[in-house]
Image (cartoon, rainbow over all chains, first blue to last red; front, side, top):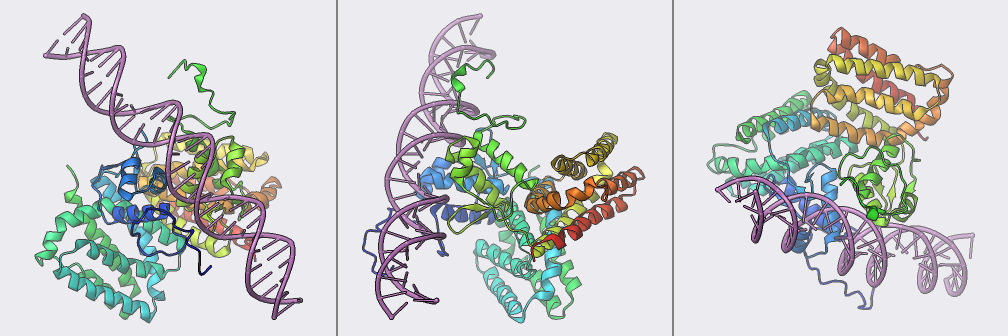
Length: 238
Length: 238
DNA sequence: TTATAGCATTTGTGATCAAATGATCACAAA
DNA sequence: TTTGTGATCATTTGATCACAAATGCTATAA
């Protein structure tokens, strides 16, 4: 498998997909990029995504895009219009409440299971994330802030060892993407102005973890979700 | 769209897809059938489903099957093998516990929300299902029994009005399919022998609903899931 | 001016084919 | 007997094309 003769001059594609894990198919790359963009709230609600359009953007044929879109639709991250086009779901207060209610019970359980199983190394990671958040807070990039928040939460959830819960939470966060967009555009200025401390609750969570007060960790996670919900609800249309 | 001239003799297909809702594409039909089969436990765990094989079975080309499989994989109802083939997940005791733990918190919440909102008409429907179950219990068809059980639970859950929860529960039940298969093969004889009363707990739930004892309804739902879990765990491999 | 029929454009669906990849098995060498 | 190598096969992935459905627009007539 070494010294492969140069018969393998594959394609003209040069898209820089993230870290190549293993057997990275084109469709996977498209899917991952779209998924990440959706979760971070980089698309507008109600925006319609066409197969041909995205295929052109990514420089691939229609097939990979087609399957990636269907996959996201199956996860309820996208809606299918009457003609088959995919659309980013619209945001509503009712849906926000619905999502948060589900997030609370599922993430509370994942915390309950995960918190006691966090290793000292995990705790170090969490602390690292918090201090990075403080840095970034003074900086400007809202998307890395969102990513850090994501890492913080999922480090705890993953410790639960529950594949089922992890997947459930991932689909919930995916559907939460459009609301994240509102956070980006409306709350980012507050953070920059120092009126909001994004890592505040995370610090409390780390403290509770260090004193092994797992019930409080759970409560803080729930409070974190509820707080986000309260911030976002008045921003929803009408 | 009526009086379609017979230009539309599409394929040699005669698959009796269920109720045609609207804009029924071939891929939707394949998807629905596979989904139903999976949820009812009509596939063997670890069974591998190839695109070409299913395409032949359904009498379609590969495309619709391909997309249906990807869709199911996105819902974690199927696993993707290293070569890209789709496989029915294997059953393990650990996964059973993991699934049931998640089912309990999510379905408990859906019950909590749904039970108080059930209309008198809904109650009639529930009673109807219970009595049908009693009939079928003496009969032999385990799959209709499974379907009735499904209808009973989802009638309550749907009353919650929470799209998010419904969708979560559906994917959980989908992943529960392989375990349902074990129920079919191992428990069916017991039911036929009269050693197990499938509708027992459902009767209790209806009673609790009529007396508006919603906390008890919730407890009964949880007990229902736990009971199934206990029955199935010893049946899991090794 | 408005309503409607018809056309054009956009977009997805399904079929077919070529290319690439992983799995399997046989055979040879240590 | 065991291990490494190569060939073959099964299967997916991606591209392209024909077709159908939906949408929007324009022109024409009332």
